[in-house]
Structure formats: structure tokens, C-alpha cells
Amino acid sequence: MTPNPAIMQAVEKLNYRVTVGDVATQAGLNIEMANQGLLALATDAGGHLQVADTGDIVYLLPRNFRDILRNKYLKLQLQEWWKKVWKVLFYLIRISFGIVLILSIALIYISIFLIITYSSDRDNDRGGNFGGGLRFFFFPDLFWFFSPNYNTGYERRSRRKQEKSDLNFLEAVFSFLFGDGNPNANLEKRRWKDIAAVIRNNNGAVVAEQIIPYLDNLGETYQQQYEDYMLPVLTKFNGKPAVSPEGEIVYYFPELQVTATENNPQLIPAFLREFSWRFSKGTSSQVMLSTGLGAANLIGALMLGGFLRDGTIAREIGGLVAFAEGIHTLLLAYGVGFLVIPLIRYFWIQWRNQKISDRNRQRQARAKLIESADEKLQQKIDYAHKFAANTVIDKENLVYSTETDLIEQEVEGSAEIDAEWQKRLEE
Image (tube, rainbow, N blue to C red; front, side, top):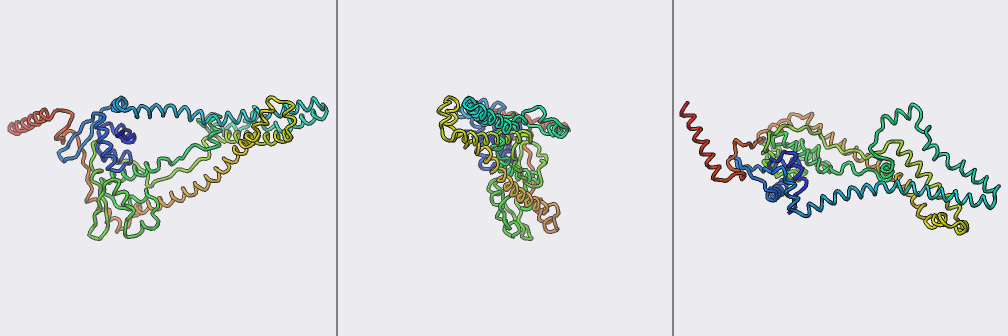
């Protein structure tokens, strides 16, 4: 069984000494998965078990466990190698769209220039006037984009100072076309980490109203008597329900009540907030430049199609113009797609962000149930506190550890007992 990367990251963040509850909270995993994964990791990496006098278990992992696993598992080596390779490949893919855009524009306008020059040689007066008019009509926008005066003026200078982007131009073209990924790709992980943190902050005992700001797809069930939406939480963290004398249900989670380190309250948001999608991480100048170049590319492709309509001039000139004619359909498709894809994506983002905003408002409204708890809800919370507990396993309450031989531990334990009795006799 290959170790779970989320469990390995959790162990590192928790300083290599953890309980199952610590890992489940940090990684947002269910108790069973955290337990199995931690056992597998400790076995493969040569970890140690520490058993407390309460019967709870602490896992102690070596700090170089990744090196141990890397030498043991070829699959892990291949995964790490592929991550490095994919990082380079994905970067090349990202910048390729900007490179193709520049090459497309260059090919289109060089072909147009060659066609106009060739036509001018055949009919100097007609071709010259047409070419001059074409140059005057079409190229000013491109010259305007690249001219030093484009970014002059107080407003543009101020905007450039305020806007900063880590993207270069080629990366910004990809961002303009396809965006920068899902901002909520780790939403489920954040959800379960927040829920586990809420349970931990309340010493392992909560009421449903404390959990619902982090859940979705509740409909109206959260206002009903039966709290079915809590079942996934109970399953994931091995929780147990209890009923108060008033018939209210509270929930406690024994595994999350045990920790290997001091359990300081974690700062968590009052509700699970989804992040809005951004059209692009590029600056407004980069977006405008991408739009302008895309428009220039499409218009140029349309104009080139007009020149190459009958195919005669391409056969007469040959060379680059003939090549442009051969791939003109592809050039036109790229030009259309370069503008249509971001346009569709823009309206899709508006619709998606509206849905996200609605869900955030719903979760925020549920969070206010706790902030303005009435007497009935407060009684329910008080009853949950009866099941609260926090067990910190340190070296003082260990009865056994696989770090040292059992006989040595028994000798040490006997010595400690003798010392304690000697101290009492002296008193």
C-alpha cells in the first residue's frame, strides 16, 4: 500500500508525532482512512508506537521518512519525477498559445504585405494606393499597443503601479484563454478540515448547528427534527450521537478528543467560504493586449482570406503565401476561437460566481444561528459540553513505546517506582 500524500504532509506539519485524530483533523480524512494510512506509513517508514496509560496510541515518525520511502518505493520515485517533468511540460503548453498567436499574426501580415507588394508590381498606381490605404487602416491599432505613448498618462501609470502580475506575456495569453484553474479545487479538503477543527475546538463534542455552516445540499432538512445531514460527519470522524433529556441530539467524537500535542484552539472561519472565479490573473493591460492581438489576428485572417479567395495569387507568388493559403482554415479557426473561448468563459464565470455567492450567503445565514443562539439552543450546547474531553498524550503518561526494548522499559519503570517510594519514605 503506497503511503497517502495527504497523511505524509499532515505528519510533517504536526512535527512527526501524531495521533489518528491529529491526522484526520489536519488532512480532512475520515478516521478509518487516517488510521489505516498512518499504520501503513509507520510500518513502511520504520515509525514507532507510543501507548498511553489510557490505551491511546501515538505514532512517532522519523523526520527523514520521505527519504526512507523514496528508497523503498519505485512508484513514489516515478511520481516525484513525473511532477517535475509535468511542471516543465505544462509551462511549455501554457506559453505555446502566446507563441502561436505571435507566429499567426506574423504569418498573416507578412503574407498580406507580400501580396500587396506583388500586386503593386503588376499595377503600380492601383497596388500602391491600396497597400498604403491598407497599412493606414489596419496597422495603427497594433502600433498603438506597442508604442511608448500607450502607457503614458497619470491614470495608466497609477493603474500599472497598483496592478501586479506574476505572469509574463506568454503566460497571460493562456490565462486570457483558459483562466487559471478552479479556485475551489481543494474545497472538500477545506470543508473537512474546518469541520474537524470545530469539533477539536469544542473538545470533541458539538451540536449540529455548529457544523451546518460548513455543509451543502441541505435543502430545508437542517430546520427539521431529524438531522440526517450529520451522518456523513459521523461516518468520517467515527462520531457517536447522544440524546439529551429534552430529546435534543448532540454528537461526540472520541478519536478527535485525543492528541499528541497541546490542543490549542484553531482560528477558523465562521462558515465555509467559496472563492469567486477570476477571469484572469493577468493585469488589465495584459488582458487588453491579448484582446487586441486576438482581434488583429482574426481581422487579418479574414482579410487574407479575401486576397486568397480564388487561389491564383498564391500559386503565382508561392513560398510563404502558398503556405498561408494551405493553413488558412486553421488560422481562421484559431482567430475565432481565440476570441470566442474567453467570451463564453466570461459569461460562464458570471453565472458560476452568482451560484457561489448564493451558497456563501446560505452558509453565512446558518452561522448566525450560533451567534444568536436562543435559550433552547444554548441548553443543547451546554448538554454537549458534558461529553467534551481533551486527552494530551505526553511522555509522562506513556506505558510503552516501540522506540526501546520492552525489558529496558520495564527496568526504567521499576527504577521510577523505586525512586518514587524512596522519595515518599524520606518525606
